[in-house]
Length: 225
Length: 184
Image 1 (cartoon, rainbow over the protein chains, first blue to last red):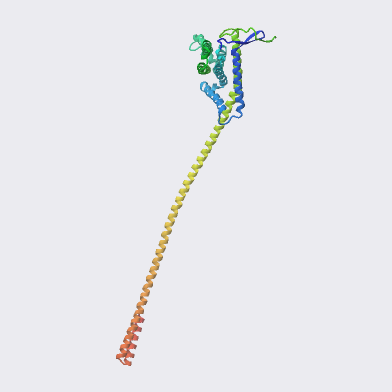
Image 2 (image 1 turned 180 degrees about the vertical axis):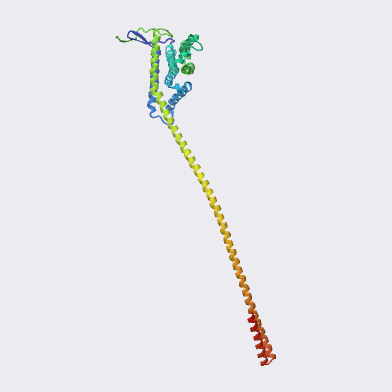
């Protein structure tokens, strides 16, 4: 493992250099895995039974749990954006779990976390204007117009804090594990790292996934209501 | 417009942990695009169909529950109706029984009265017959006594008087007897 995010390929499109980093490659890998899983589930959906068992149970539980979670947090009115956050949830969780296999989590790169936080920010503004129209803009001038700069900074800080929270947590796990692998002798690199991976990748990763999604949903809800 | 894609495997830029430059912006753009593609793919392939499947199943189960509830309500109505009918039948049965009991009691009374009346009639007729028989017997007894007395008298007279006196006394007694019979 390396602390740096390696560049695997450089593409030049119309003279613009694009670095295909380890993050982007791992993101595509996760996308491929998730889409493959979705396709398998879609194929098996035709044979889904009235009483779920096995694989059907897992898929139904995942979708139902997330849908209930989104409806409970956003309310029925705003729950139509749940599929986006289903993707965010699946992606961040898969990213964290990818680290178990010694690969760098895409969420341990600020580019990924900021992209997701930016999407939340865009959705927040869009939903604010869609559901509250002028009132959303007016809320930036409350309780007095003099507070506008503070409110604006508060709004702009949301995606930044959201992205850095996830990035920091995921990077910390990556740093600790990288240091462990780099500094310890080979004979202690079996068994013990499993505990560290379990803590940083599974526990912290799942917790941060939940935090990112629920905070994003709360931002959107507060903007739209 | 000149568009060309060049893949470069040589002289790759050095990796980094964090940076704020054009490549960061490009990376954010690519990740945002990746996110949108993944959201659309997962939404259309997995999330929406599974949710629709579960909603359809929920509807099916709800309709089955509703049907079961309706059937239960109908069954309860039928039970209530049957219970009501049973009650009515019981009431009717009791009424019929009561009427029958009354009728039986009346019939019993009537039969008893008739029997009593008939018994009284029979008794009365028997008493009348007894009285009649008694009279008849008294009459017969009287005649028999008379006859016996006559015979005794005849024997006594035959032993103690002559034929002429005997003839005269007989004629007198016969005349008295006829006179008494005519008076009765």
